[in-house]
Image 1 (cartoon, rainbow, N blue to C red):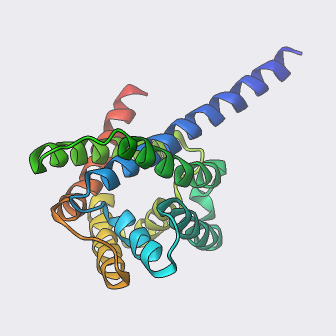
Image 2: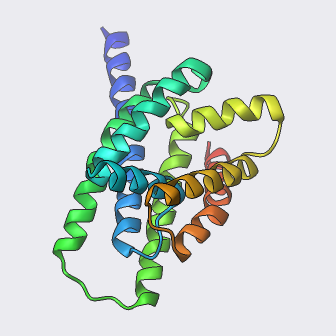
Amino acid sequence: MMNIKMKIYHILLKGFIICCAGCCIGIGVGIILYANVGSDTVTVFQDGLHVLLRITYGQASRIYNFVLIIIALLIAKSYFGSGTIISAFITGYVIDFTFDVLTALNLHLDFWLLLIVFLIGQTIYSIGLSILIRCNLGMNALECILYRLIDYIRIDYKWVRLVADSFLTVFGYLLGGIVGIGTILSIVCTGVMVDTFSKIGRKCD
């Protein structure tokens, strides 16, 4: 009986961690979109889908995640897990909710305050990604693919992420996504921030 209770406890704990990570990613992206000084690189690509297909950011996020989940399942099973699917499902809805709530506040912020808002969103987003990487319950689909690539080329995550972010930005821009100073900051910072937060997590283990 005790073993069953422990198993249930661990399942609930894992689900809670995954949900927290997915919510962090979604909240971070929602804040970044609200700041409107240039989206993070993944969101630029999703924004391009949003413009091209005339759907919401959240819907574009779900389409993006679905396609990457299929790719990750095919080529990166060792990094794939329940967190890959659950976080992807949660993220799109949290993006829409966060963006709608912030928009409803009808705040009037100048550029520098919006840039600070962007940096807050970028930090929350990076923390969410690092949690998924560290908890070993299944990374988000993009990280699954990148870590599988790292297994072959033996290059640090931050550099692989930099290249991936650059490609996502270019393709997203060509599809109609918005690029700004925030996007440049995201290209430079995301890999470094996620790597840093992951190392902090290892020290706390």
